Image 1 (cartoon, one colour):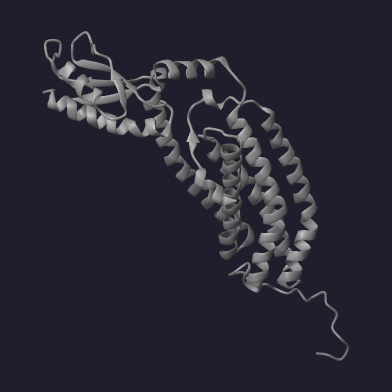
Image 2 (image 1 turned 60 degrees about the horizontal axis):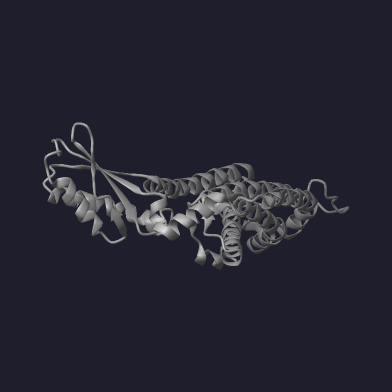
Length: 331
């Protein structure tokens, strides 16, 4: 299921996220068809200079250089200057959807090109700022990409520490964290395939991936705690195979019932006409069912069975024989 991630891409276009026909979406499509996709959200390039540019030909030269840049549809022929003539404003229209990945990727080169053009035009030590919807969205994407790494690392470390303290084991948190990552990857891949390939969405909502990860890990570690706490208790008097069997039997009903209820609850979000809610609802329902009926009752016990007495290493599996009667005559 994780192979579905091959087609993974994020969407930052909120208007395209409605799963029903809207006037805003029709208007955006009409503008793009009649005047070009970039006209719906032009980009503003600001060049701050230490001297007055009102009597200089530098603004026109910079505008001409940017208009020849690849990916730029046009630049306003009349650049605007601030009252003191030290700030130049250029309205740049890209030749692509301003919310697409290609447009977001073009912001960095546009900033570099503006810097080079200003220096060639004789502007001394120019300060370049790029604004507008595309630039703002590019900053959001960069922040989300950076924060996603921190979120994944922080959540997994916290979960591993809690499991280590609870189970008194170093090895168990390692494979249990792995069983949290696996269903997340599978769920995200299946969601990508279903919503993008089958349903034709432009991309996964840009915040949906983070929400899926946090919720799935939180629910998955709860189920792991139920099962492994019972396994630790049973392993004091039973071999690992019997201990994990009893743990699954004793906790399986609770985990299965909770999983079904939660999956149905999240699935209700699929009735909403907003892409992000639909994708999140599908992913959570799918991921919870996968975790409830495959990962916890099958994968976790299989790993414990293979590891045997080392499943809770370095904690030693003790056998409490105090309650076992001793045969008469045996010292």
